[in-house]
Length: 275
Image (tube, rainbow, N blue to C red; front, side, top):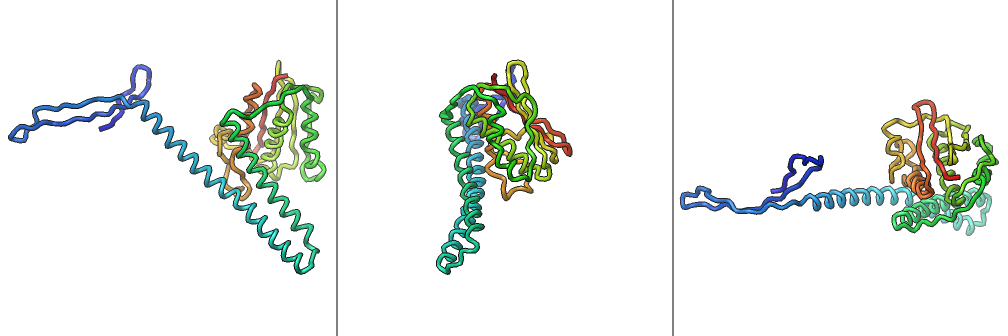
């Protein structure tokens, strides 16, 4: 038998395993029991952790296969159409089909990049190439194409001269993720405000939208690996790795990341970096 004892003084549960044998007399009455008692707490902890890891692996494989299948199928169909049109010498739709193929290829590239980043994080191989630079410069370079499209108004406010000591490419990755999330989860909120502030010995950067906001129970899990908010955007939800990767990048810079949100009143994602 295996069973859990009452909690110890250290408030830790303990698992015990008993194994034994009963001895009977000629009348089949038990008169002796001989056995052993073994503390299997450590093994139980390992078993539980293994089960949880296997579950996460299965969840990940399900998400990854679904997300990769969609753009790859679109890309395959587009290339087949292009090939057929090439044979028929009908190039009138070439430009739109090539644009569709490029979008699908970009989606696949982003998903693969997320997988590689997680692999590097898990193996401790995510390198940071730090240097000093104005955070506003990275913001300007990140979102010039979105501003040019004219659909979303990305406005930068605050201390435009504030410099940080960080890896500009990794910070760009975090900023792009936060703004893309604002566009994806709050598509009706056309105004996105990025604010730069000096907070004691750190820079604080926030991304604010006027979307539907996040439920408190979701906000507490939003930076976890594979976690995704809502189900109405399943067709373009990604792997649920973006905020997890962003969190790890900011932590490795010695900063913090968080979210402030009220349902119906929008969300503000923020992070800090050493000056």
